Length: 188
Ligand code: B4P
Image (cartoon, rainbow, N blue to C red; front, side, top):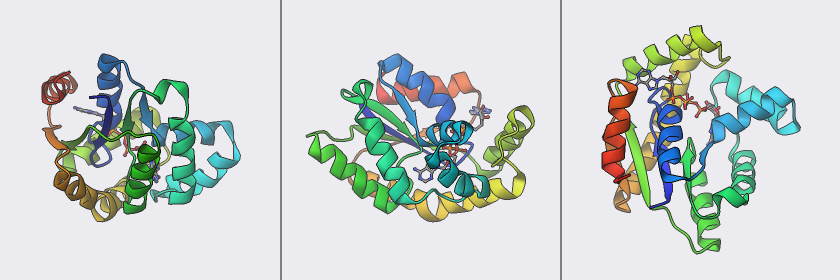
């Protein structure tokens, strides 16, 4: 089981947990949010395009995100497996990922949903805002990201459930507790 997706609202712990799972399984954790932030910091053309959307809590356009994802999956370390964190987020991205994998005779093995209360996710992101000062972690932008997730991304879970790929994991509690639940759920 080496091609995994992790989904959940902003603040559900995707980034935190995906690094651990990927480490256990010896596959790269690929976060589209991290790639955007690296490009924003480096001031690349991709970063300039992404910044407008990320800072306001919107999604970066599918055409930009999909092209970036394809390039990342072409890198050597992703040939035999990966854990995608924060991708796909739209119906268009689901279709694009299906096509990219079909070209490689590959498919997704499991989709993990981290389930966390909305108020708990907001609390975590406000804590992170204090610690790290991320530009998209102000309360109004956090609420906008939560709503966008509910409108555009949460419906995708049904699709993966119909494909019998979805595993739901309780993301409430301490980081280690959640990590243990996840490891048990995916048999890692
Ligand atoms: P992301 O980087 O994916 O941001 P996120 O949804 O907030 O998740 P993140 O991984 O950072 O937070 P986590 O839940 O792990 O995306 C940022 C932006 O990039 C998006 O808004 C969008 O603009 C753009 N973007 C990214 N992908 C895109 C795509 N596919 N299409 C279009 N646009 C895209 O953790 C949050 C905090 O909780 C952390 O501080 C962590 O320490 C803490 N935490 C985790 N687990 C905890 C626990 N158990 N208890 C207490 N705190 C915990």
